[in-house]
Length: 191
Image 1 (tube, rainbow, N blue to C red):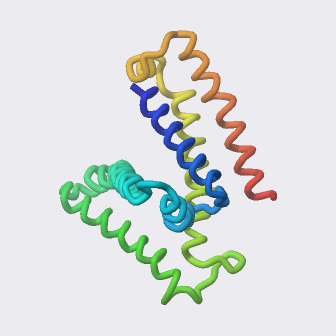
Image 2: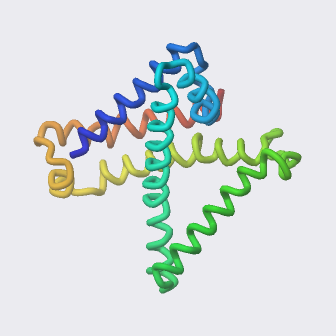
C-alpha cells in the first residue's frame, strides 16, 4: 500500500520540477515557489488556469490532511494526560496552530520589525526551525524507532515486504538514514 503513495509523490514532484525548469524559474525559491513562481509558470501554458486550479485544490487537500495528522498526537496527549474531552482538546490544538499561523502572517506587516537570531524575521525563524531542525530530527527519531524498537512482525504486517526487503529496510533505518540525517543536520549548522 505504501508503494502507490510513494510513486504518486515522486511523479508529482518530477512534474512540478519539470514545469519549474521548463519556464526557467529558480527551483530553490522555497515557500515562494508555490505561491509566486508556480502561478506564473501555469499562466504560460494552454489551460494553465485549469491546471493551477487543480494543483492548488490538491495542495489545499494535502495541507488539510497533513494538518489533521500533525494535530492528532497533540489532541491525543491532551485527552489522555489532562482528561479533556476530544472536542475541547481539538479546539485548543487548532487555536494554538491558528495563533502560531497568525505570527507568520503578521511577520510580513505589523511584526516585521521584530528580528531574531541574526536578523531573521519571525516567519524565517519558524520556517528554519521547521525545515532545518524539526523535520530532520523527527525523521531521525522515526528511523531510530522503527529500526531498533519496532518488532519485525509489526513491520511485516504493516508493509508486507519480503524478508530480504525487510532486512534491507531495517539496515537503511538503523545505519544509512541516521548517518545521512546527522550529516545533513551538521552541514546545515556548519556551512
